[in-house]
View: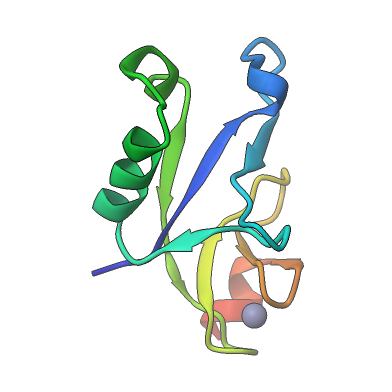
Amino acid sequence: MSKATVARPVDGITINGDLEFLLDDNGEVRVFNSPEEARSFLVAHGVDLEDLRHITIMESCGTCRRCGSPLFKSLIDGYDYQCFICDEDFYKYEQDA
Ligand SMILES: [Zn+2]
């Protein structure tokens, strides 16, 4: 089962394509144990189907070689992965070597 996180348009605006991650109560990116858990969380918090269409549930695409946390696809052009614990974006070769 791969970890998952939730990305949504900044301020709910879909036009410019910028995404932000759903945060937890401590201001850290919220990571779920599975995409299903992420979806259940959103529904439980009153996100309706219309809103869900604009929300991307991102599955983890690997494990960070530096800290062992789940890696997610980077939102920054040119980078391949990001680690929320290291708070860094990585190139493919940095993680796949
Ligand atoms: Zn890391």
